[in-house]
Image 1 (cartoon, rainbow over the protein chains, first blue to last red):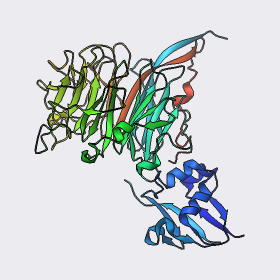
Image 2 (tube, rainbow over the protein chains, first blue to last red):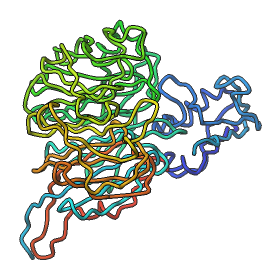
Image 3 (cartoon, rainbow over the protein chains, first blue to last red):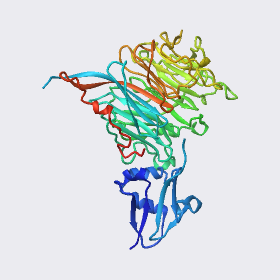
Image 4 (cartoon, one colour):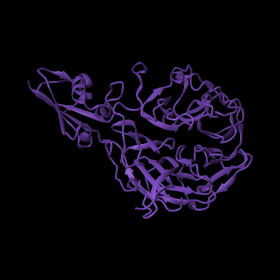
Length: 95
Length: 394
């Protein structure tokens, strides 16, 4: 079964046991929401960094699927195909 | 092998827009600074819990990217712990998400383990396990006034919590909403703002809606509290039923800070700001003002402070310790932190050029020392980098 890979920014890697990416097996397309549920299940602190307690993606967390930020697609309902890579990148914000 | 003894020292925790710094001193004259901890996260709230067998420093941490959380350290900042599921988490039925922790308030020694928190969105929380897990106060969350509470510039939050020695009377203040009081330990709440002006509203004397910036309880007189309002400085002697102005004698009635003495009746400190529209110290001359007669008169205190200072002091960027005489501490939005070991009579600069200071808390802590080498057992706390010690991103 092919994997879906989620690449983490370096600043979040300590929250995933030092891993630079997380994978989950998938035999078909899954939504970003269920993908996040799957890969952060063992890392609850990492999960809270990405989404608040209502499940919403934090404002300055960007997730890219096929090079497109998911807010420009279907948000957390965006589908990710088996074998794809997903990028998590913090937005350029702050001062 | 030398004999061991316990010595008292002082810890000053400085929360800024871009991290936490900790200062330590044995005499409140010489301070050593460590940090930053949680670099690039703001620290708007700090609680130092000196009850029990260890001092616990609790911090409200907020990253613009990664959101808010509560962390604590039982070794004066050498290591930090963050509960996996988060210490403060809105229940699912509220459909709300935590934005910022504005206040962390350890309760009295007679209620060990109890810690209160005030948060944005406007909410009050209570922990019974030393601040590791908090429960939402439903009485306030479900209050019928909620839909009419507003947001100050910094956000809509419960920022002040004062609990009486008996534990039955709890006063909170929110911006904007004003003062709310509970007579049943926090189960139910009523607005208590009579006498506090809301000059910015069509009706300047509403039941609620005031922008109270900070409240503090008198150390010795139960039912007496002081308030620094959005213009106006007030005192109540009847548990919040009526508030009277005590602003006469101050150079300005605007400001954010309200501190009270840890033991002595009638002593409070404010840091006046010129006006709502000109948020600088009056004439650009920073000064603390202290009353020793419950607001009947005020004494200007500026020895050791700079000749010119145009930065404001925010509501939680000031604190007292429990020593004798009491220490007074504050930090500015320009990143300077000042400490007084004599109740404000004179100040010295502990730190400068830090990011905007959002919160300051100070406490007396005990350290185990060896009589032979005079080495503090907890000295590691002063040198630990601790930036991402609990997996908290820098």
